[in-house]
Every structure is written in structure tokens, then in C-alpha cells.
Image (cartoon, rainbow, N blue to C red; front, side):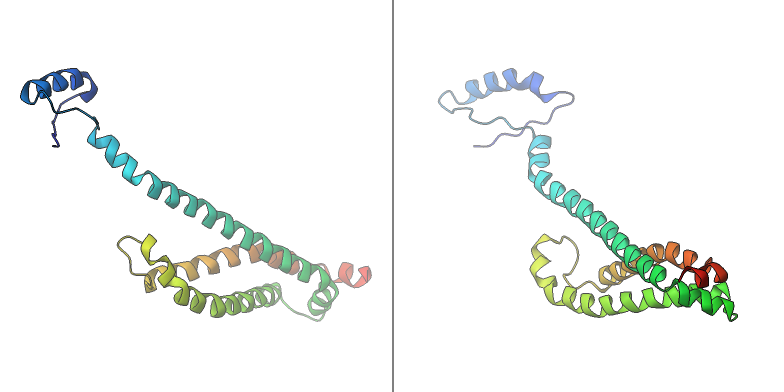
Length: 177
């Protein structure tokens, strides 16, 4: 037998009175478990909330690692191509052209990654279906937002190496080699 009692204020204060009333109603019925509905609700969603928070944390960590990896790759490539960039600028290339050259390389890498990643996410989405609430496993808006997030992170990671490449002094770059 389950009995629910609606109270105003702290329900634990009324617990002795509820037990006494239950004994009056049914002397031989044991009062086994006293659960506050709010606590039961919290217990039922604690694991899901923990998983959501862990997912958000690890998603942010993954985005940071992607940004750092792309930044390091582009910074290395810009550094290795310092003489070429200096020569281009000495021959009349504008800063905007150098910026676009670095951004174009970054966009090519990201496009290749998205061409592999989006179909893989589409194929593996059925495995995650049990963890989704209110979404279909192949929600195009979510996939589009993920692709937009990857693009945003990659453009932010490209900004520093691109600016560094555009600020190369042609004479200094030509003398360094």
C-alpha cells in the first residue's frame, strides 16, 4: 500500500505524525520506506544530469583540443613557409591575400574533416538513440550546429597564425633563410 501526503513546509517534521496515523489505520502494516517525492524525483534524474554535465565538459574539452591542434598545425606550417610568404609579400601580395591563403588552407582541412565526420556521425547516431530525449538520432539541426561549431572553432584557431603570416616582414623573412 502506498500513501502520499501533500504538505506545506518541511515534510520531515510531519513524519512522526504520519507514522502514528498509519498505525491507527492499519496496526499490522509496516511503514517501510519514507520517501519525499522531491528526493525521489532528484534521484531518478541524478545519473542523467551527471551524464549531461560530463558530456558537456568532454565536448568542450574536445573543442579546445581541436582548436589547439589546428592552431599548432597552422602555426607550424606558417612558420615553415615564412620565406615563401615573405617572397610573396615582396612581390606585391597584399595582407588580405596572405590572410586568405592561410584561411583557405584551414578551410580545406576542415572541409575534409567534415566530409569524413558528418557521415560517420550519421552512421553512428543510432547507437546514441537511447541517450536522446526529445530528439531524433539523426536530427539535421543538431548535425548542422555541430558542423557550424567545428567551423567556428577552426576559424578562431586559424586567426592567430593567419595574422602572424600577414605581418611577416618581407626583408626579415628573406634574410632568415
